Image 1: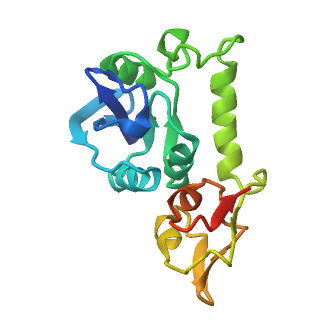
Image 2 (image 1 turned 60 degrees about the horizontal axis):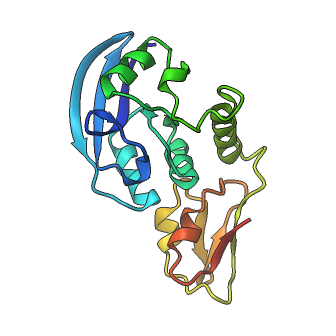
Length: 196
């Protein structure tokens, strides 16, 4: 497995049920199957783009979490951070299960996250992430209504993959780069961007 940094959002010693509203991370530096160092880290950001940037700044390799919104997951994934979602249980057990490659065990899966067919919903969730961040299989891109766009540049600042620029006083999206994460749509103050 090598050296890596793992982040687990936590609440009362357990994996936080919803990463989007988590306020605390356990950061674990691991080498192979051994935990070298752990520390608690407060999270201050609330919106998906800001929270994704905050996590990326921590230079983590893997996020192991409970439920997570698709926009936040896509933005974190766009920073080359692996996201393993729909996991539940005590943080120390989750960390050990990760190191032993046992997170797929049913005891660590969120109730309702497995669907009727064992891990099928969990696998679909991970597959969907791949579709969203791999442009070859994703058809969703941001579209700009130039009549509504004021060229404020907020979308440029929050785009996790730098797919937007201001040209001629309005936002312009490079459809070959856009991952359809919805960050720009969610944050646009003029409702000028739609992801479809």
